[in-house]
Image (cartoon, rainbow over the protein chains, first blue to last red):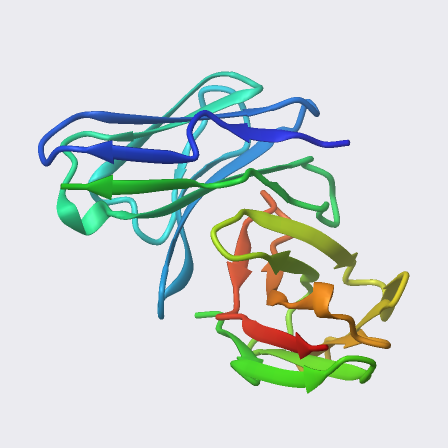
Length: 114
Length: 112
């Protein structure tokens, strides 16, 4: 079974803190993604990566950065957490094949910034 | 810009009913389409992936169809059960890079 594991289910951080959200997949997938999910706004893409050390901005990259030093790990970084970054964060991965492949998601991290 | 719409936003049915969830998209360019299930407070579970060259996929009581020309996909759930209660999301999957664009979801409640 494909496994995408996010390091925390719940996090509470203070405004201004630097926050790291970690995601690890065990299927040798090339593509990895970070989404946030908010009521009424659905899932929005923050950043994605299609190879080690490669990254692409999604629809809402402001206030975030990412790191992909190893193929299996994709980190989302909140440089200076703010209350409007309180959200559910979801990591996903997939193979990179012509024609597209199935994406698998982690269990989510509920981040609260106070 | 590609938009994905799911109708209805919420649905409540008695146990045993067959039901159809709808997903429409604005651009009929070639995309794959993936259906997910999400339980409250949890991540997304993949249900079915329909590749752009296919018209439908089946898994157990679930059947998903894709009509690119009309920009529509449907998820058919046969003989619904209370355990099917969840939010169902459809997503277009880009061929290059695998990026997904999501609909807002349909919240399904199956009453015993």
